[in-house]
Every structure is written in C-alpha cells, then in structure tokens.
Length: 203
Ligand code: 5GP
Image 1 (cartoon, rainbow, N blue to C red):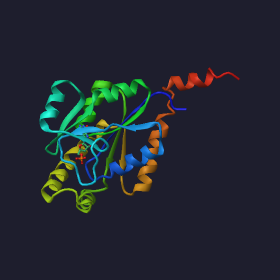
Image 2 (spheres, rainbow, N blue to C red):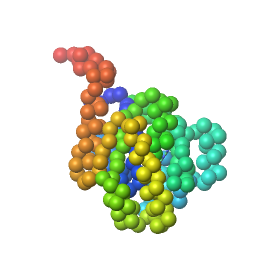
Image 3 (cartoon, rainbow, N blue to C red):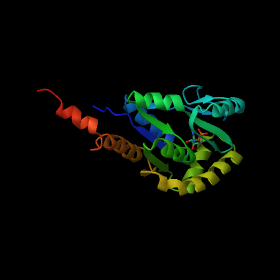
Image 4 (cartoon, helix red, strand yellow):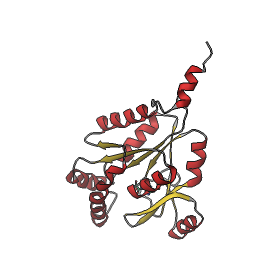
C-alpha cells in the first residue's frame, strides 16, 4: 500500500528512550529500514558491528569525510558520527522508508541538503528522569553521563527544527504516538502516487 519512500529522522538526547521506540517501529513495519551510522565511539558491551553502528577509527572516518561518503556527519559527545550517502540515496530511489537516529546537527544538515523528511524529536519528561535513565543504563561513566546531560540541555533548544515532538513518559503511549506519526505520514494528500494507484485500478 505504501509506495513512496520516506525518511523518518529521529533525534533525542541520549537516555530519552529513542532506541527502544525506533526498534519497536522497525519490528512492526517490514517496509521500514534502519540507517546504520558510522561512528568512532567504541562499541558498548551489547552492540554489534554492522547492526548498531559501523565502528571505525578516527582516521577512517576522516578519510570518508574527505571522500564525501557521508550525507551528514557531526561530532557528538566527543565522538564522530555519520550517515552513509549511498545507503540513503540508493534506498530512497528504491522507494524504501528509512528511519535515522541522528543528532540535531545532523538532522539540520539533512533537511537543508535533501529538503525532505519527517523530523521527530523525542525528549524525556525531565532532566532528573534523563539522569536516572542514564545511570540505570550503566553504559557510560559518571563523567560521560555529565557530558550527555549537559548536551541534552543544549539539544532541547533545537526542537523547533522538528515536525513532531514526543515526550517519553512511558513506552506504551510514546510508541502509540510514534506509530501514529508513521501511519499518518503515509496518508497525506501530497502522496499523489497513492491517489493515482487507486484511480488507475481496473475494475
Ligand atoms: P550514542 O553514542 O548514544 O549511540 O549516540 C549519541 C548521539 O549520536 C545520539 O544523539 C545519536 O542520535 C547521534 N548519532 C548517531 N548516529 C549519528 C549519525 O550518523 N549522525 C549524527 N549526526 N548523529 C548520530
């Protein structure tokens, strides 16, 4: 039913629950694929190279920047992160729906380069809540958590770049909100191809 490929760009200060929400949506919709980013951050204990990220060295990252292999890239919390240009361009051409989990700097770059996409911002209900989630996750040192909290305060100011905002109070209602966005975005009148499909159908 869904024909035209769409780009769902999701950003959130870390700890806002974005990964869980994106994974749920990916599990529910076969027509949605995840853009695996490249990063110079070391893998966390449960992360898989090629699935969560492509983990690469700073040298390799810089080489890829020089070769214009990233459609967007940014330095986030002291590490580099970037999105593969070929992956995005080729899959959009094929009409695939893509979900990207990138920071606000990257989202802004994508928006100005591609002039398309649905931009979704997810935030925790409070800084206290965010701090608790980061501590409970136990993936970062105290120093790194403080950097992430400081950045989270700055990142919230970017919310105006986004089309939608989800305040993640609990995963069930936040997922309902995310899924509603996904569904509604496929029902837009601007999706001319879909209208044409219906009217071109032979009886
Ligand atoms: P984490 O280290 O917690 O996996 O991610 C840290 C931040 O980097 C998150 O805000 C995440 O959205 C962002 N990020 C992940 N991949 C990319 C990317 O390819 N480009 C940009 N600009 N940010 C990314």
